[in-house]
Length: 508
Image (tube, rainbow, N blue to C red; front, top):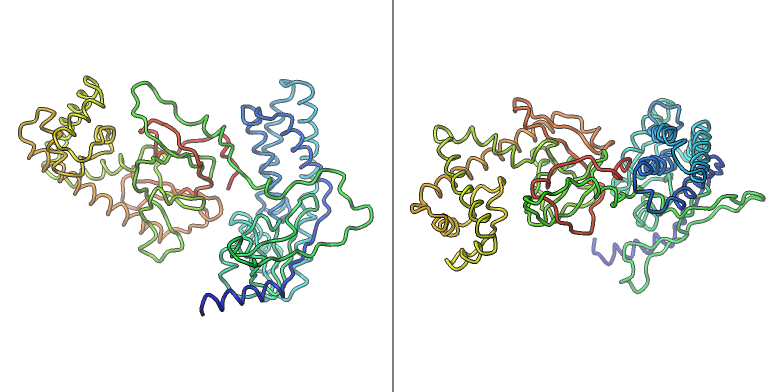
């Protein structure tokens, strides 16, 4: 099919369809949202500082999960009640230690959170079931905003004997055409093409009445098109006396976002002797963060949907985006792991090769400390070195300079008369590390094929321990939740290592 014919089909579909909205009057969730908003407004920047950061993170997660997961709290599948109970526990520790006005606002938040827990999220669950029952079984599906919510709803449906398929946006948009699709949440939380070029004859958005959603959605061609695809949602008629008594919240404001200020405060601190590099801060599922060096090239990742044998991949660091899955060691970097695994491939020359590497790296670090990195770099370039990367060369992660000619220039500058043994040792190290890298990839790939990756799909992280490999080879798959647009200077040794980050909890 040509792109022109396909585009024409999109435009025709957008004229014919008209999504509708089903709003749920849920007083208890609305007053909880209002109490959370008023407390956040009062705290201002203090909301990113202890002890408030954890309280606000739990509160925002409770509001988001109860709005996107139409499952009664009493169901074993529900994950929405957890942040409410965490919020109550954290709030009880604060009482008596804060000023009276904030204590009153916190008391209102606690009271309204208890009200939501008592209501059990039943109204949203009942509304979703009512809408689903309007369609024929086998021709009706439910679409949630993410995998965690989808898993909770699917588990609940199994408990109560409802056989409706539960999908997330990408499979829904790439799959079959349905008669009826029930979308749980505001349209602003989903890709716009779900509404402008839907995979259902009828689409219904279901969410609480205090959530203010977009009325119109623009299609895949956007602003460059002379006439864009635009769809308006049919709004329900307001009932007499049904006006909200609390402030509505714009739907985009409810989407979980990392508190970058709090996350940055969790970065390991640098000392005067640390080698600093430019890096971007990424937030991972499970409340973790990681620093991705700008100067780095690749990082190990995972594509769970790829064919067997192609799931463990080498990702360009510049290609790491929200939704990417990284394979990281929680204790140390992969480079340190490969040094351990590569040693077994060096054979009888292992000690000699490692001693030669330690010799030239020690000399280089002494020269930098004695003469300064700038002077050493200028001296190497004057000797015709094409590439000079002293910070990396002197680090433990570097095996040797990439070019033999640059390596020889460096070795002679460091007072080594015969570079040949050092260059040969460097080649042997590179080959051993390459072999170790291939072995690790194969072992991880085999482990991925054996595992049920449901925990990764639902929670955004899962530990992988290759069978037969040393315990040091254990890695964790983390889904990337967000990547900061800013670049910061951090210690090189702290990059590529996941760390517990304030402000990163409850984002999965």
